[in-house]
Amino acid sequence: MAKITIDKDACIGCGVCENLCPDVFKLGDDMKAEALVPESDLPCVQDAADSCPTNAIQLG
Image 1 (cartoon, rainbow, N blue to C red):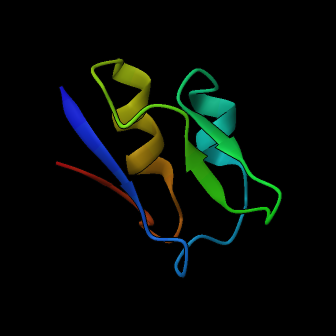
Image 2 (image 1 turned 90 degrees about the horizontal axis):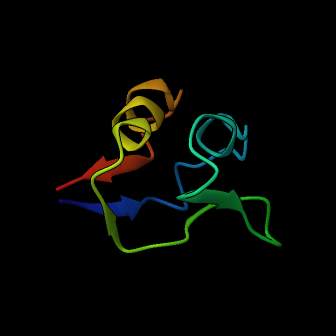
C-alpha cells in the first residue's frame, strides 16, 4: 500500500488527480489537492501521481 503525500506548495490545483482518482483525491477549499485517505493500493493513485504536472503527489 502506498503512502500518499501532497506538496501543497507545488500543487497548482489543476484537478487532474481528482479526475483520475476521485475515490482518493479531491480539491479542497484552498483549491489544492487533498488525499481522502492516507494510503491506497488503487492503480489510479499511481496514474494521478504520474500525471501531476508539478509532481506534487509523492507515493511512498
